[in-house]
Image (cartoon, rainbow, N blue to C red; front, side, top):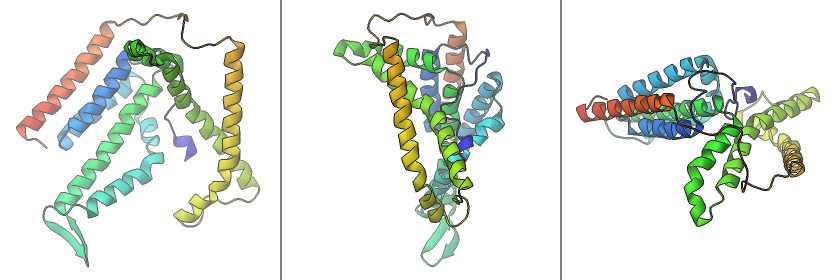
Length: 269
């Protein structure tokens, strides 16, 4: 399952999506998340899914890879579905057993919340898969630059967020190595109940935390050796500039939100 985690990974490329300004991609990702929350039915979700599929196609990222990234949150999706299924009592009763009742309204609400969660994760994946760590840091810092007037450490916060994001696949790879080493020594992580498998993962935490602190210390020493002292006075090799493709992407997302708003106004769910 660790290999299926795609958050934080970057796929180098020269597609239209890769060449978008990182500031534009950050704002468009937020707008896409807003579009998911604005959707009041499956028709709106279908439009968002179509938009994400087209963006993935343009960035040359296979849908299979995006779907694989959903496997780590499968349990969260199932729990969300079950909670909304049994705790929503509106509508006609489809199934009843003792005090447990499943209604058509609860079933619709459960599917609605599960699909929303899947779309949120899938939409966010496109940002990290098509944006390098340096570009992501520059984009975050540029968007938070107005906050410097109130002494907000925009560069430092952007740097910490991008480093934390990019450390995810590194830590997952380290956890996979530790797991394989312990399995070679007789540890069992795959059999037994869900609680037993979760308990078997506890011995992974100590070496994983040690490895994380060691990598963090090495990174800090490397940054100090390169005379890193924050963002004050630093220059960039590539200056951020908005282009026509950024405007075209913004118009596409605006049309998507307008279409979803129209569907909501017409009552198409």
